Image 1 (tube, rainbow, N blue to C red):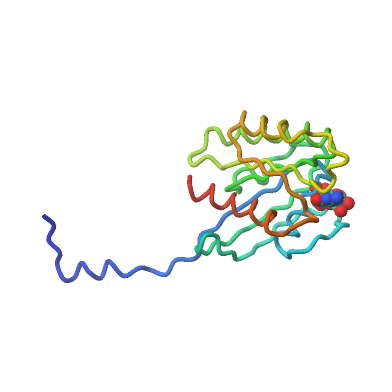
Image 2 (image 1 turned 180 degrees about the horizontal axis):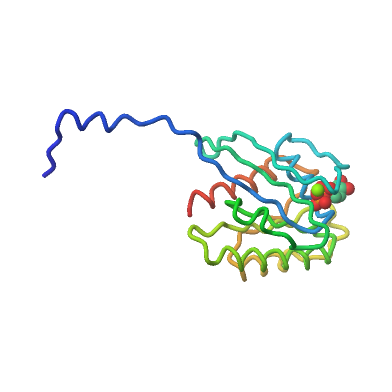
Length: 187
Ligand code: GDP
Ligand code: MG
């Protein structure tokens, strides 16, 4: 039996919390569409020419499953695969690792990222989730990476996997970022 004293009830007042934050790092080979996906998520628009060397972090207040969250997206611009990862590893709550389905090399680079990030996150509690993203599905005619290759890599590392296009529908792109938030909440 629990005894409730009148005063204890004041503890039930819910304090006003800042919305939770979710820091998403977008990684992948140059040209895979990291900036295009980031800009699409933030503005609903496809920007075809984006400075390939520009690395920046953006914030957006989002409602994911009726709960507010401040999503911060770091759109990275590495020149040659996973190097100098310190700047984002500790900051990240989740990783989107992007390749382009019409470019086999971008898939190889993406594997290097998955391996490098996994090596780091394995020891973490909570473990920052990785989401594998095959971009440019509108380029189906020029596909060099089978969907099963992506799915196999994702399964091997226990990641979620999506194929999308930064120049097709907004909701599919938004969903990838929202799934990252959901994965972080599940941790
Ligand atoms: P990043 O280096 O990974 O940031 O790649 P960008 O976002 O700058 O995109 C590289 C090139 O691919 C640009 O010419 C984009 O217009 C193009 N691109 C990006 N996403 C898509 C996509 O989903 N479909 C197509 N067809 N082109 C894309
Ligand atoms: Mg870019």
